[in-house]
Image (cartoon, rainbow, N blue to C red; front, side, top):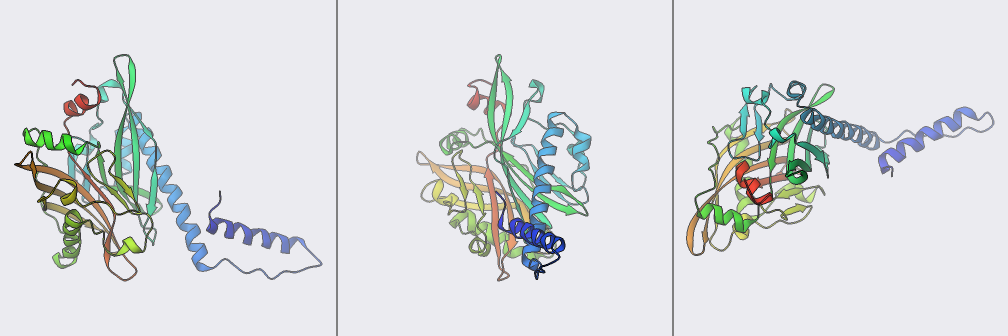
Length: 333
């Protein structure tokens, strides 16, 4: 089905052709409005980003790491988070980017897109995506499908999209999160060197908004201006599109507190979009005993029409060792 903006564009084109082909009747043809033309351009950029993401999957499946490196914003301070606790890469041109970081890579794993969702900033300079990836892994003569949640930020580099941030996770039940944390089996998030991404006064609203969100669930200003917000919380069913998500303090029980520990912020050149990687610590009670739970969190912020910042995408997860993931999925390491 054609979108309204593309339909308007095609209708105008048909009118122009009709007027050129007729000698007896001339029709006044009005050009598409500047807003319609802008929407049409954004749709083309969105499709281009969608193609870029799918091409990256193909490169991963072929083990072509060099080609993937060409599509990374190496001039930026990257924020890359994998499923395992130690798989966190930050900074400019980090050496670890050249490694094959896929889970179960020794089993000829394949990555398939199941639900790719692409969004752009209002000016088309930044895109953020979500996908539920199907990780196809060979196991005892059969093929298992492991759902991996993927969010990412891409920036426009002249005539192409390049990756600036990525967060992969496995949705793990909250009861199991509690159990592993109480047993001391959840690895801590690697320490992050704090980076404000510019002046501290500019970063302060973003840090404050992230703190308000994890404790109260408030997304901020653009939640009222956009209809495509996304929140992913640690549990497998805790995926919220354009809906109010529960705060972590509610999700983990009465008396829970959540603190934003270290963070790294990047701001787009337009100063209208920003993204942040953060480590969180949840203090809660499990069977009456105090329990500390480490989480990774990534946020995408956009300035609303009223110049207030808001969260348009939030992804919170627990880092799992591959052995822990295997135990949960296969019942064995």
